[in-house]
Amino acid sequence: MAKQLEKSSIGNEDIFQKIANHEQVVFCNDPASGLQAIIAIHDTTLGPALGGTRMYPYKSVDEALEDVLRLSEGMTYKCAAADIDFGGGKAVIIGDPEKDKSPALFRAFGQFVESLNGRFYTGTDMGTTMDDFVHAQKETNFINGIPEQYGGSGDSSIPTSKGVVYALKATNQYLFGNDSLSGKTYAIQGLGKVGYKVAEQLLEAGAKIYVTDIHESVLHSIKEKSKELGGSVTIVKSDEIYGVDADVFVPCAMGGIINDDTIPKLKVKAVVGSANNQLKNLRHANVLNEKGILYAPDYIVNAGGLIQVADELYGTNKERVLLKTKEIYRSLLEIFKQADLDCITTVEAANRKCQKTIEDQRNRNSFFSRGRRPKWNIKE
Ligand SMILES: NC(=O)C1=CN([C@@H]2O[C@H](COP(=O)(O)OP(=O)(O)OC[C@H]3O[C@@H](n4cnc5c(N)ncnc54)[C@H](O)[C@@H]3O)[C@@H](O)[C@H]2O)C=CC1
Ligand SMILES: O=C(O)CCC(=O)C(=O)O
Image (cartoon, rainbow, N blue to C red; front, side, top):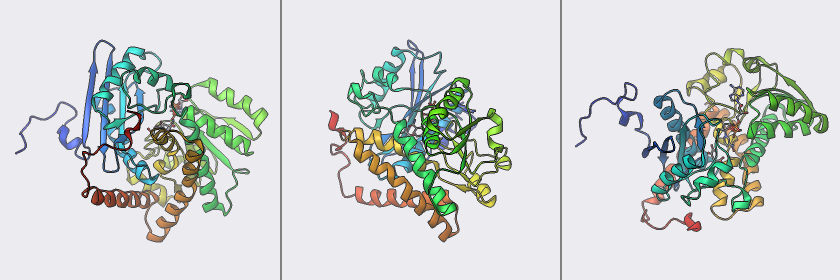
């Protein structure tokens, strides 16, 4: 019988209610290095959990927990949609990436990952870099997305950015009847690892882009880059990006940016970007739909990095990664069409497809001993 526990001090909810959809949530505490992290494993039906580690100065444990729960659930769907034999997981480290990083902190984090003995593989996300995981990898084998010189597949934001560009092409095909990127305008929020590379590819294609970032240096850098690449760049302030008169809004920074405050400002025909969890709530998919704005589900668009880091565990093959990343074009078009056919939102169409993939595998899993050595552990 379940124990009667007092209410958790984390928020007003019972903690088990909060994590009801998740298999496992691990709080990692190492006072010596200052590490405070949470690892969330959402669903391992398709395979061991896989997902990056985000470092962010969360204001509270509640905020960090909320983020890691949503992000890890998204990974389950992302793996299912991209036909990757992994489950959904993610980690967050509470801290300022510009002040609080140290080799010791990432080594301690590596030890916590090791303690899960292959149930969770991780690498970079917002606020973390490949170099951070070179330290973590000293303590565990369950790290991916490390630099090529350390035997990894290198920068996963390269395939992520390519996937975003395939998604933009598919969106143009659906909306305008041809998938050319040129002659269109794009409003990019965030010129970090992914956004900057998307901006470069759009400029190369002769597009007009509006850009914003909280770091001025990247804005000036892309403006300079446009002189050699072509296209045109207009820099706008952070809060102005939502109201830009562009064809597509391309969010490549934080999640939750499609919400009740921002949707009324949007003038675009579509939202297609790399940011995880772009919708503040599921209902915002309906609000976008009612406004006639096409939404490309984030976990379909941004799967390129996942495809590469998962591939790394089989032995990296860049050609195979590119082929699978190209599939984002077909997969997104299929979701747009299915949503039309069933008169549902694109998010609902994508979720239904992924839920079916997971359910089918859950049924197949019952035939096997789950204790067998997973083929993914080839590095051991
Ligand atoms: N790196 C990858 O391969 C993948 C990234 N993603 C998601 O894509 C998004 C971007 O990831 P990365 O480029 O790796 O992160 P990053 O940390 O390299 O870049 C984020 C950029 O957004 C900027 N930014 C932050 N807040 C902002 C604001 N309010 N307004 C404008 N700019 C702001 C930052 O200054 C930074 O330049 C994240 O949501 C991440 O979870 C998803 C899948 C894979
Ligand atoms: O892109 C990566 O490095 C890992 C996959 C991931 O965490 C993500 O897609 O959000």
